[in-house]
Image 1: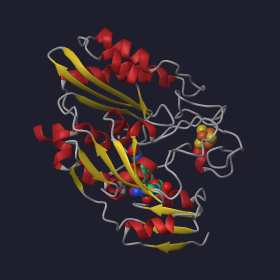
Image 2 (image 1 turned 60 degrees about the vertical axis):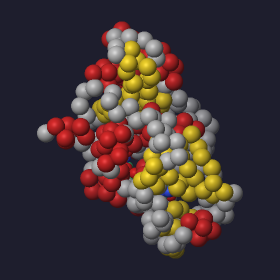
Image 3 (image 1 turned 180 degrees about the vertical axis):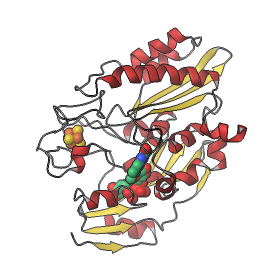
Image 4 (image 1 turned 30 degrees about the vertical axis):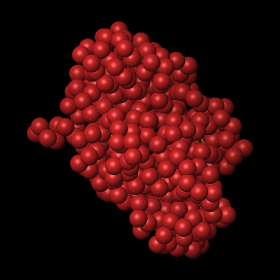
Length: 338
Ligand SMILES: Cc1cc2nc3c(=O)[nH]c(=O)nc-3n(C[C@H](O)[C@H](O)[C@H](O)COP(=O)(O)OP(=O)(O)OC[C@H]3O[C@@H](n4cnc5c(N)ncnc54)[C@H](O)[C@@H]3O)c2cc1C
Ligand code: SF4
């Protein structure tokens, strides 16, 4: 047992005061990832700063006609929020594809962005892992890597980001609001998570002590033409082998705007602007979707056990775009039909 102190600040400024300048402190929200990591000795905080009582639980309209989601809004509350169901069903579908109802009740929006990889070696302190202990090596390269990344990898780390919600947020071009010792700032979702490079220990571009306060969705939610497909080993309660968030704005048969992001394939949610540009202004056809999938998987490289992900992701992209274009009902909209 590693001793730690526990504080439950009532205000953001108090939380920041406790969290700034103390590298051994950790913020805790729902605790569904952090506590697990503490149990297996991967995280050893000297102080836990419980931010779960801070006033960051509201979902409200944002200045640009979008929606501002407080960092402590629980995943389940978000998935069933009327404005999310109506305007951003892609977000609801992605959340409901993840974890279990009990976990979603505890898991927070901010915590979901900051959850760590599910690479088994990262959780196993008996094995080398550059993310857990920089400079020790990567056990997944040349090891068991069926669930690992095929895009954006480095010689240091081939881990994936495990979130479903983040894939939808990447596709929708959300913004992350943070506050830290030097004040508030907004981070475009594309700039929030990092590729491993030579510093796989850093998952995001958050600075020390910063707290995520909200995630803002832009006005366009692509409610009429969207799909979140998650392919996994079990039908539920499993992380993605591959997932795809596809969102289209259709004008007749023409794709006026396209969004495409993949999960389970890279160290961060993998949005593909080149494929989006290739789709824009074109008539939706199977050939066009196949071309977009080729673009999305350009440069993909397997590591042995996970080679299958490249073909799987390619097919998943084609299926997601096809379903999105047809307006195929998703779990949320099905709920209304049934
Ligand atoms: C068995 C299991 C299955 C799961 N399956 C899925 C799945 O299929 N898909 C999926 O997407 N997720 C899945 N999850 C992950 C789950 O969604 C995350 O654990 C959860 O979203 C984390 O939120 P939390 O509030 O519990 O974070 P915590 O565990 O409290 O915190 C996680 C990290 O975020 C930091 N943190 C939290 N909030 C803030 C903040 N506001 N500002 C700064 N730092 C912060 C903490 O310091 C910590 O480092 C699963 C989890 C488990 C245990
Ligand atoms: S893939 Fe990354 S997290 Fe997994 S063992 Fe290698 S360095 Fe560690």
